[in-house]
Amino acid sequence: MPLVTTEAIILQAFPYSDTSKILRLLTATHGVRSAMARGALRPRSRYGGVLEPFTKGTATFYLKEGRDLHTLSAFELIRPRQELGRDLLRFGVASLLAEILMRTASETPDRALYDHADRALAALAEAPEDRLPGVALARLWALIGQLGFAPALDGCQVCSRVVPPDADVFFDYAAGGIHCQDCGGGAVGRVLPADARRALLAYGAGEEVPPGEAAPAHWQLLIRFLGYHLTDLGSLRSLKFLADAMETG
Image (cartoon, rainbow, N blue to C red; front, side, top):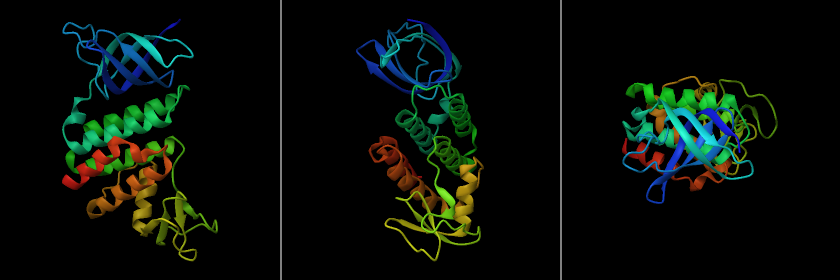
């Protein structure tokens, strides 16, 4: 039973019995893993209350291959990211990012995915309030692309013809991409103006584009797309939380 030490981000933490916690960790070297932190809820716990969602640290745990739950031995804090609790939007986007990772990532090592998630959480924590919606949309769409689920925005999903960047299109949620004007609408979707498609292409590349007055439409498109394409994400609590946060924000 080897002892593993690796950088890790806490995606989820919840109580187990009166004294312990179970953590879902995105690690730099072992993918997503679950670990029990024994005694974490005791008043004088050696973890010092740092085992909270979005925290980055160096985790040491006993790895039991073939087992779903491992035993945490130590967790040295690198960055707490308490800023992500400053407002509902910041917290909602971070929660959605973490939940997407828990549903789609595996135990397979993926350093690029770990680094991407680390940069995304850092950007969300540091973004000024007036830039937060653009940063959030960019980080979420870029994560979707990193996981291999990016929508097809260059060519028509019906006729395969390349669509000029200045053309309005129809975004088909079910097909996961666009239809040109000649092919018309699909089963479920919406008209996507040319400027909105250019913004989506920028978001997919991780580039911030202020959504301005179009912000509600951009969030609706993102939430609907997730509901169709990422492992039954319609049941994710963070999707409803984020939608509610957008309505009250």
